[in-house]
Image (tube, rainbow, N blue to C red):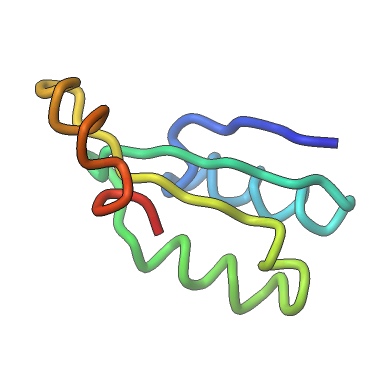
Length: 77
């Protein structure tokens, strides 16, 4: 099963992402890092172990949708 989590790098979002991964979900998380950091996503990956392969993350920008749409490969990791 697949799940989209907005704010995936925040406190609640990162805990939610981890629990979804541990429950067997494939998770696509997005965040703009206004009140969070990439460190949270890296920590989730560490805690999830091999299940981290089921996590996709994309940094989004709320001000420039054109940039995200045309350069998605550069913003997603």
